[in-house]
Image (tube, rainbow, N blue to C red; front, side):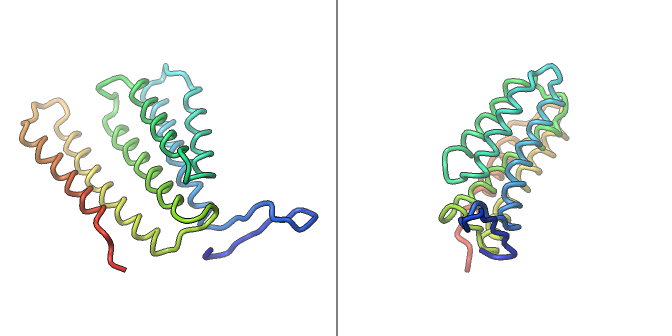
Length: 182
């Protein structure tokens, strides 16, 4: 582990918990992204029930604790499903669609990095930088497509423009999966 670490022990000297800045940042990223999705759904669809938000946050807490399980995938699926089921189409605020997409990207990237290595391990700085760079690349493409969608809101869109935009996103996703140089 890198950085300052606080180990909490019981009276018998057994380790109860270990807190590190990296571990706290990871948990904050996962739970924070889920909270952003919850708030976006509740503000975009005011009449929607609130309890699915509690389910999403609970799943995010589990995903933050055991990122190498199925909990992150389940969290993503439930959060995206709640958004699709609750928010009317077209969305009242197209900007919130982009916000939710970026929050789900953060949740995915954070849990993916957290799942590398044995449980409890804090990823090395170079691994976090590489993953953040790849996520930023995909996030940039997502933001670009979102900006085009916002600009085209209410206008007739040429099918070729949609194809070019999708190819651009596919190219960014391909670039993000290329091996990095060590």
